[in-house]
Length: 331
Image (cartoon, rainbow, N blue to C red):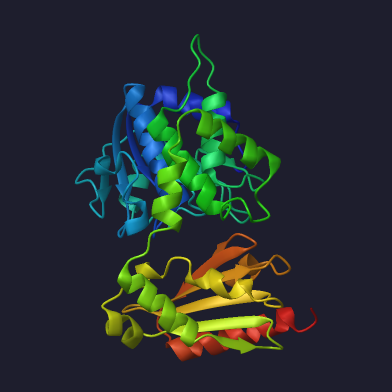
């Protein structure tokens, strides 16, 4: 495996060589992971490639509007691993996509495209750009790097998928990763036909009754600690059962406490049937990816997470609070 980041041209060489592709993003697919999966599926099919697109369950209701989703095998792995090329998107390590080892081992070429700060160069071809706001930004640059007699541009549907990845990973262009390049790419995608009205309406201005009830319960249970620098919300299985809700219906909850002046770190701790999952957010003064890494997770400086198996929700909450206290006590 190569250890250095490859050029976008190297990705194109691998794409041009490959004939039968397997594409996947990471577990618990978000807008960036799924948007890029759909874009690359569409692009490769336009180039005459055979594609098996996979996404781990479950897809959030806020992403089911994305064009091309019907082409993705959600939770259904192929019976045979007869692919010459595997493309993993936004997977910081080869396990991040799920139980895919039987596919990865047989692939002649493994392409890894990612933008996380901590990311393994596990592919034959790796393009890891931690300065990029999102994998969607990198995929758009991949279009621009296409070198042939014709210009290759995203279709309106592909632009919609990429813009979804870009806008969700930048928090509607308010996070520190909303760079000039991110804004340039966003503008270009709008010009190419990205349906930003639908994206904003579905992702940011549509909530079910259950989701709003769960938000109310979460805010009711919000605790402020360490001179109000740390906000903690714990949702137990009983909380979810009270509204017939699932942990997937907590989108956006963890960001709510960061609106409170003085809050440096916000945590949403969820008790799930087989694990405890934690989402972290920062106002910008704390790198929460460094906190998540201490628990085997990761992500971005202002948005990260991790999961713990074999421990109770209170035990995880106490361990997290100890780490956060050490980080924020001198701020």
